[in-house]
Length: 285
Image 1 (cartoon, rainbow, N blue to C red):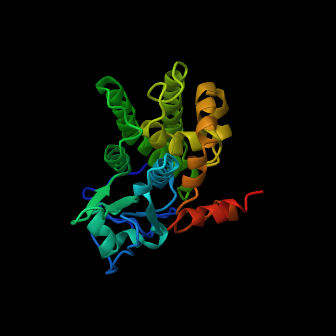
Image 2: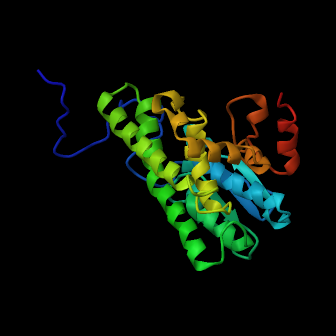
Image 3: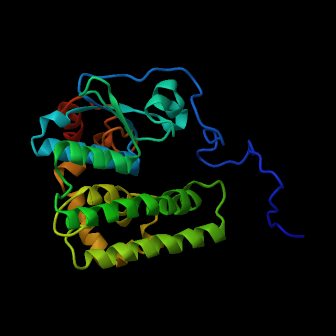
């Protein structure tokens, strides 16, 4: 008698496969219901949730506003992915992949849709001229790490995070496999940060904004409740960097936008002005 899984000749979806996100996962794409997206008064319209991918963009926007870039004012609309908001006809029109975050830039006659979190960071950096060096060598190094994150984070989130924190059962093989990879990635970052203040050098860039919500949160014990399990405290350079980024005011502001869990002072489900964040952060003890 063996419990080994024998794949069928043709895979079909198991409606009872369990897990936290089982109710929304399907093997097809496209809209599942008709619903238009709300549009606020600012040119930049963001549709998101404060997952690590969502935090990337709100941190970027808050950093731009902190620099005085008023054109970066934005409306951030909550997308409840657990309830399938990302499968509305309006959302699919902005992002046919039905993943948050998605952005629509109304500063031009025909609104520009922008999806995939790394591309949104790149788009905003180029549009406003901040957090991406113009020097070719420095810019290339930033893009090296931006693409590193886009390729690595799925192993942390969909791999380790899923099997360690969200799967209906704890399975030894996938947890061990992805824990090993998560620690390898932390080691990559730790060695890079041993000789650099920030991820791509001495300048704070979109590489930091992309990587911190995943690996900074993980290092600080703010993701998957796995800091002890992965011994994240042993990555001293990652710890130094993660704490420094966390202390930035714009990061404190950006991480709470489109958030619906945690303490009261961490939750700004929808953001339409700076005051929406101000009044919530004022509740912080």
